[in-house]
Length: 140
Image (cartoon, rainbow, N blue to C red; front, side, top):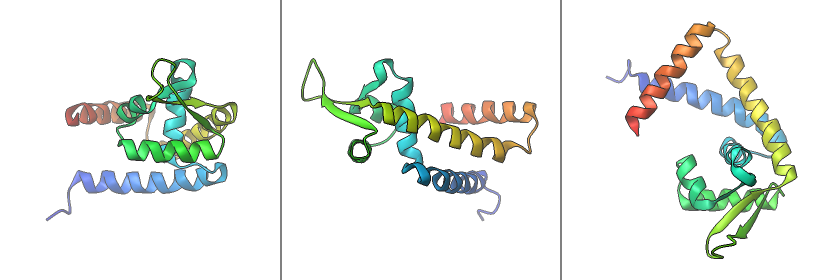
């Protein structure tokens, strides 16, 4: 019944990539979602974003983002503070340690992806990216 579903294969690939990435990130005391959050902060203007902006950008719920923020703050990777305009709005600001850890973790993730896609030609990798992007845009 479900033997030929592409979704099963996509899920299996995602599970394996997550397993490999999380094993590599353990050394840096990070998970893949935490690394994605740090990457968003690294890419943002002034290395800070509101929790609401992170929720929308990462497609995660408010409780998940809040819990990640607290864990990252406890590790010294971010600082949680109130907005200068409205103290009720919580802002996550990247620390120097968080920036360093985020960049190293990003390199781990890129390395795992390179290894997993090594069997594809440059053209196949380009096509895969385009097809995945097309699927993503159709889902949203």
